[in-house]
Length: 419
Image 1 (cartoon, rainbow, N blue to C red):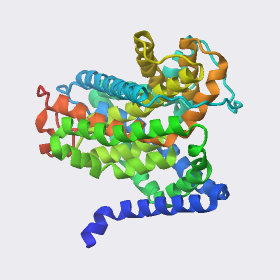
Image 2: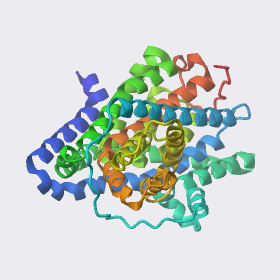
Image 3: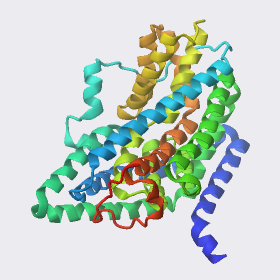
Image 4: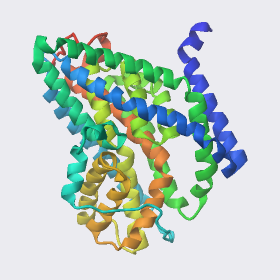
């Protein structure tokens, strides 16, 4: 009994907090907004810790590489898997839209966000870089910070013995901020409970309004994708054992994702889950932070649903070959944009609306749907990174990766066995 509580006590308390918060949201409705500051405090602590955690994780992983390690191979496989899963999610959603057409009459809504569309050149610049060093410390510049971390890691690696002290600092920082995350998650039952109460109390009733059918399509498709496709991916990565390990260690990341509605805030939980699954540090510390920014299966599904709704609103068909091909291309682009720049979701919606030539009136319904599907979208976006990292390990480490004990991959050379 003591061993059971030691292994699962944290999860039990977390789920208890979430359950209590959800019940409070149902009972007190919008009055529960009074608890939102508690959830905000917890979320702000996560956001404060995640930037240095991701920096040290990536930089230390690269700085600790041995000459035989094939980072380029890891990155190549990572890109293929990220792209492949996003396209699979989009194709499944397109089939769902064909099977369950969206015909209800949706009405527009007044815009509440200040949208300032910028030239594509400026958007690309903001995606990859910042103008000042301190701007790298903002979670709104995650991709730029990740690129900077990669550069620092390679610089430390190239410095050799002269940079040994700095490399040691990177490894120490990585360990310290892992512990910071553990400390912050002690507040998880209260923080996530408050956030669940807020979401259920404030957004719950909207799920049964005019957008119910499109939201039902999204949540049904997303739930099937979450359970079925993630299990398939885990099976590809490690067979039945891989499926069991993934779901056993996916509880806290899933709760964090749904409770915070933030892929960035879920990165620490995913990295901890990856370690427990046995994913090599050099893979997890690079692919999970990058995945938190660029790999978004949930956004892929929501992008297709938004397009289908807008097409239904304007009486256009969503089944011709050219429309579907453009939809897939825009889905990949939107999935990247959403995590890379501030207000990325709204910019992504503007991109596909402009690509299809719809008027500005098409934007409010897409924005409303994007807001209401955010919890499940974040769940798919963030927890998909861990199973993607499992597949990356499978195709870079070989079939037997789950059988090997991976303890200190900063000092152990990664095998390059062909898959």
